[in-house]
Image (tube, rainbow, N blue to C red; front, side, top):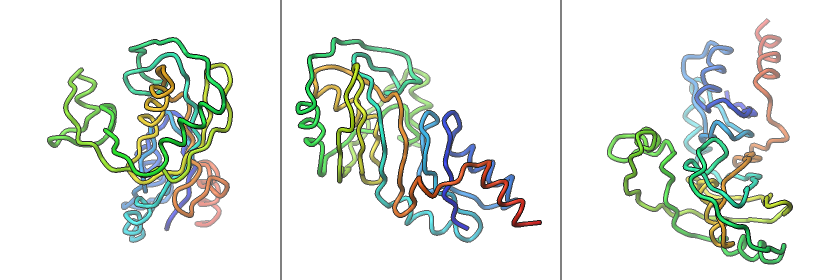
Length: 217
């Protein structure tokens, strides 16, 4: 069974997996691409023998809506971290922001953030980051297929992006802010699509649980 679940804010992707496992009583449950706890949106879940399909799904392009808050940045590059730097926001026009966003389109190399589940030397980076240990990370090739400015107001940039597997939108947001002459972090992140799985067709955990109970009765 492949499920299109809407992950709410404040819960880990594994937390969703654990809840689906409890609801369905399936022993084998996995997901097709981690979402940070502060993020929300499409989380593709596989159960039973269909977990084998998750590898292909994980490799699909993903789409997001993200908000960058300019003027300060955090150690996690999102709103859950501690502010580590502040900088004035220059006068910005929509055209200037659009030009910077478009400059990220195409292939590039991106360094994974320290606060991530990526492993270096057998240890997850966030475990090292919590001990204030910073290690060298190899850059990875990413592709930004589309990126568009939706709105800029009061020091906040709302944009949409479609990108390849392995793209850290938190890092992208930070890089965008730096290219605009300031600093920034992601204030919100919504995953709107994973491959053919759209947020329009996603189910909340509560809705899935309700329909599942009706199904098994």
